[in-house]
Length: 85
Image (tube, rainbow, N blue to C red):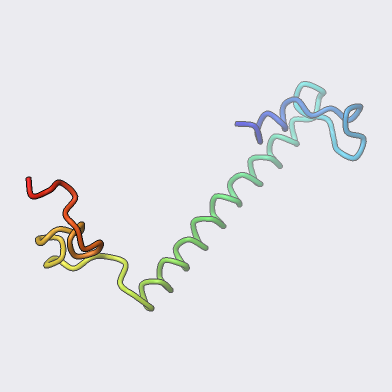
């Protein structure tokens, strides 16, 4: 929400290098802020997807069904999480 608030409350007299926001008669800045937010979300999603695919090629991300049946505490860490309960 802070990114959108910048588009609402920005004031050129506080930051002379910036621009005025919505309450200072510049609704365009909210659109610029929203585009920045959306592009950040898309970038993060795409890069995360690529990283997951690369890791999955190098080593399996998901545990095997056999390991899940035995229990991941034993197969991954070599110990029982709940003491045999």
